[in-house]
Image (tube, rainbow, N blue to C red; front, side, top):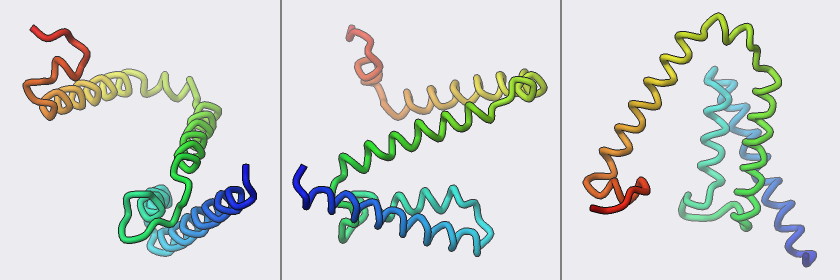
Length: 124
């Protein structure tokens, strides 16, 4: 990897960390959820925010974001309690099933009449 590429990666990470830090402080000051601040930071730094691009290597940034999601899910798994799930088991299962059903119906309605092709079914 050329030396300039490594500086671009470090610069991208520095920009991401600064924007995330700023939004963390702002949302803490506003007494709003910090997770919402991280989402806003992602929108600010993302490649689809005109008129300028803060991140140069979008592919690497997406790969690091995917790694962050995996680590977040791993951390949630470490904190997950089966005892707590048993206490709210029926409510969680029913709520999850309703959520999946509503989301599936919504997605199929948005796809329109051509949904069988998009869902992998063979056309008639």
